[in-house]
Length: 93
Image (cartoon, rainbow, N blue to C red; front, side, top):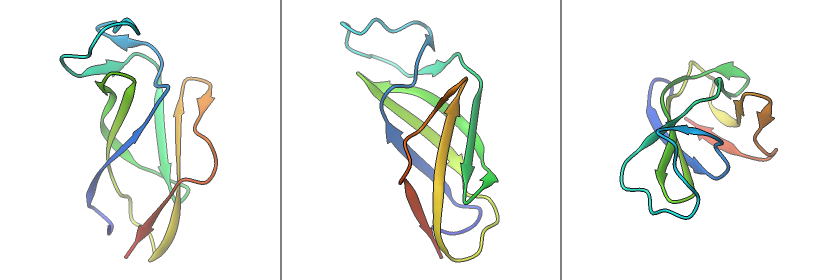
């Protein structure tokens, strides 16, 4: 990955979505999160184009990598007051 590239990241526990997606239902279409989202890569804000459910229990984050020097860049997703676990990195070329 390099500066300006688009990346899709996946995880679990996005929170509430619009439209609402009950936990006992199969997801048949994407649903954006309703919370306030911020994503940093390498400590710099990254622009997100989508954050939400793309499958049952699967949170998808589509973002653009900000201007960063080569190396490992930590990825931190915050939705409202919830923050992703430590230890997620992207290697930037």
